[in-house]
Amino acid sequence: MHSMYRRMVLKGTIAMGAAVTAGLFTPLRALAEWPKTAFEAEAVEGVIKSLYAASSVQDSDQIRLIAPDIAENGTVVPITVDTTLPEVDSISIIAEKNPRPLAASSRLNPKLEGYFATRLKLSQTQNVVAVVQSRGRLYRASKEIKVTVGGCGG
Image (cartoon, rainbow, N blue to C red; front, side, top):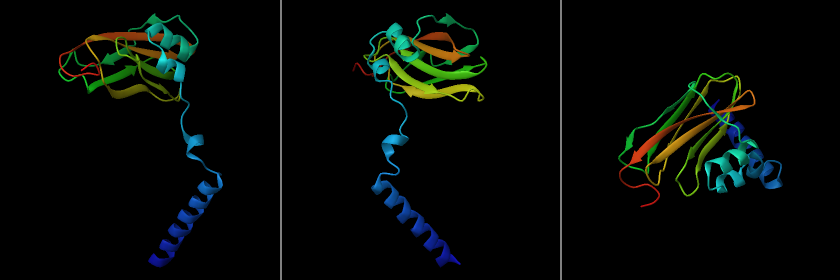
């Protein structure tokens, strides 16, 4: 019984290798879309315009941006965005004073809960902005995080 299972695994592995070699399945096709201009933008407004082709964003108390008030180590700052807005399409996190302000952007299934967590590298004390797209509209929440040591500035 075990040898039969092992043969199935080996056949599957060989078939997958052949498919990759033949170009039927290439990793480039599996990669997510890369919003290059948004990551290259140098200001919050440029990031929002590049990502969403819009500039109108309203503040919302339905977005919770959870982060420490003081980051003792700017190289690893935990950030969580949680929202009660309905049908969330995407959540983006922007660090205003970083050399490249767009820190993270994720598209979500609108049927899922609006939640995103990550760790950022912050160059200095600055505002971190969470932008949530819900039902075609943009909402934001922000929080100032004081960075005491490290960060991408040194």
